[in-house]
Length: 446
Image (cartoon, rainbow, N blue to C red; front, side, top):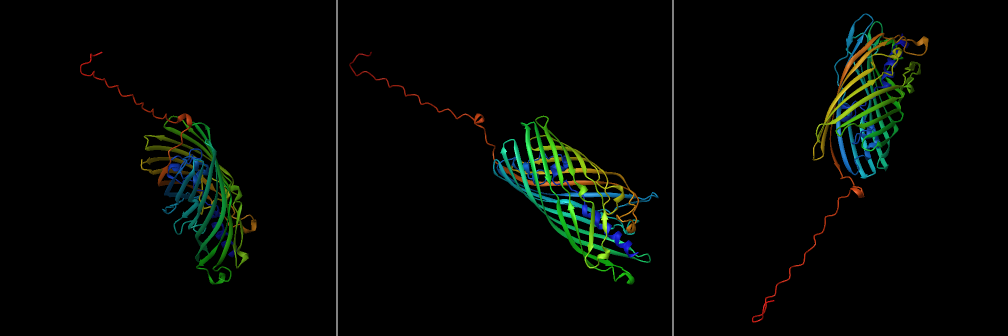
């Protein structure tokens, strides 16, 4: 019985170790469905493609904002009973700075939450021994440098310092009573990113590509138990825990088109190397007998993004987007602590730029989580350690609202020699007319 309880506990921690990738890191990109790797030219390039930092030449820009993620998840059991998650809001923030040191050289700094997930199920529900409340967040500080060796091609690269935090709460079944456990931990990691942006056809077509590498997070924290019966307290007690999570490598590649003077189209594909997350070991420092490796067996995914932007006026832009984002979770490892599913996203947004340099971008996405079956026959690889799953179906919706506010100051673009305006013509002074001499008195007039 003791082994069964610990296996279930550890499984809850493992799912949140992978987490969700959050790609709504700016109001403009959110409204365009994230299809901006070839079209991004503002300071949010720090996240979407660092090569875009040189697009505005000399000058500077600051941007800050927040994204509100409001999920409404549902679990339907084999008997048809449906449980909805408790209302919650996740508010991952973002902030960016860009400085163009020269026309072809720029630096940038970004702060964002690259991965995050939360679950909030009602007390006493059928899956309370799998998950009640859980939260994972990673905070990225990303410093980038971009260089354009030619006016139509630029490169960018950066380093990421990542802080990850994890909290989990769930009920424990002691047959004759119910206890609870809380897990909390944190980790630091360092990773790298890079990008390229090419103007393939001048002022008509662009290519963009960005890669963010794997980041290892070595978590350490503590487990806190409550309501443990006397006969189990010699083995199940508060103690330190540790574990390792690898954030996956991601790559985003896309094309941008200028259809008309006022209309731009973005087409992107995002690849995520979720296959690197095969299992997780949460180690109990003081009692290694409680440590059980947990299989996840996630697989790689590719999501597809379409976005358009239309210049209504010089100051006002309207945006639309669409995303197909498949789940990386097989049905055999899908559980309520990370109730994932294939997502369909419909996006819309608006942007405003004032002549003073202040700007605002608002983006909205409505997300539909398609029905995803969960079989979960066993939560560990070893047959003698099978704790049983929670079969059923997950579905739901989510609403995402992203607002970015900022200020930019850019230098006037340099003109080519043939574009330089002609010098004003110098006015030639005409000689003053000769004065007519009057004949002297008494002399005849000629």
